[in-house]
Length: 426
Image (cartoon, rainbow, N blue to C red; front, top):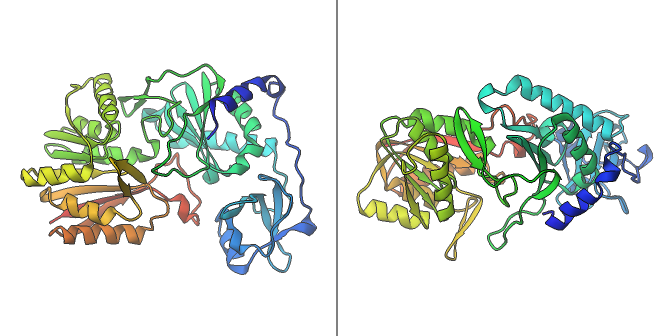
């Protein structure tokens, strides 16, 4: 994660960047030094998968910096395309072109950012202007980078080390094309663990954002903080899930688990829910939910807050024989509450078992997973098995995923990380 000192350093370099994007100086391997791939990797790349895993390389490159453009070929030397090299990590190459002759640089970067912004003009709805993903990494041909618009500010996410090789021209291009009030950088290269806390986003350009910036989605208002360490306060990728909650909520008792800032709960209120209960470990999340409700014109007490461990609250609700018609559950990949760790990769079955105990007859469960390493079949098995262990039967009634401003190459299964499942409980 870039620290505040790195942000200051970036601002200090501003005088150099103001002259326009500069091509980075790199050691560029020639075609005779192409990275050769095993046949399965070649087939994967030729189907459009943007990653080459390290165990697929016939040899590595010594002394080549992260983000250096490298030619890629099959074992016979036939060109497959060009990618950006990563000396460390499971992903060795991030593909940027299927052409044999290709030059990666600021001109291509600007071209692709322009195309990404044009796609949002077509794909995005007026109801989400100001709360939209502008660039979605491999889906827009720019590896390891996502860019969100949050009102008049821009938040850049860095997911790969290779981004450092073109971060400065990227920031300059975004600034020139969008003229934002300010730009922030969230460094997500290092995976989060329960033992660590991320520092805040680094301020890269422009003015500082308020910690209660108001953005709108479908006529509702949300307070966000672009400098926050984990999330600004609204997950833009879950837009379709929020809309689904609103459609399902009318006249129903809604339980919103891992409620965070209450965006799903507020959608339930907007949809006409009879009652909404939010459960989250952090009291400050409930405070933000009240602020969101009031900003959108609702009663700040429209969602009942329960603070603490989700499993403990589910057991208390079951013992009191409280039942809900719609249960929305959106756990983080990891969470720790008073020493107890929840992992989305291994604990979905036990979570679904606990949820089964508070489901009214004919209840719906909207189960949400954003863990890219959790395969869809394992997720579904955990949901079905957990319901049976809790004495109920679950049926899949529908599903949705990422909205149009989050495009993903068809062959890139890892990019389809968001899974939203509607289960009917009998």
